[in-house]
Length: 195
Picture: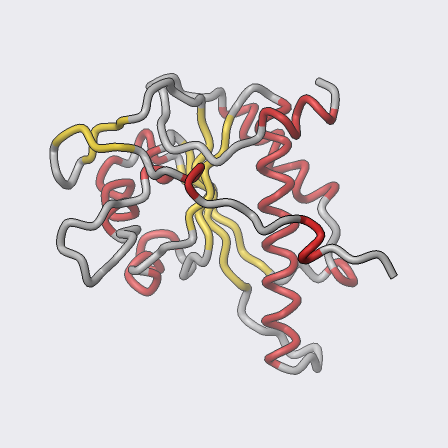
């Protein structure tokens, strides 16, 4: 696939088909992270977990319940990105003893998670899959018991489904997918300047 085609097909996905991607496709993406994503001095400041959510319904439900958009609103929506057949979770790795200050270590970790996540988003499209980003994780500490890290970012990975509604496992009804089109970036000239 041409790079421009990958870029144009990449979108944040909220609804998934029941088709399970071949594990080889997920392995290809994960291997690409290791082989191609830059890391300052090759330290890799993040941990990553590949979760076969399609075969772990209780864990997937726990992730979904922990991704409520607004904790103060009892009827708030949840984030269906984690209802994908696979979920890749990222978290900062525990700081090592390499002399890097904690604040700078956290900065490096955040930058590297962002680069790895963007790689997943593009590599998934290249192999015919889609990705949904979710950082509204309200139960990070609880998730550590299940996946060994306190996730900062989830990427749902699977085949995208058509339609504007999905079945919410909490409300047990069809609900609208989040309207990400209602949010727009500022004009490019507001944040991009040539010096």
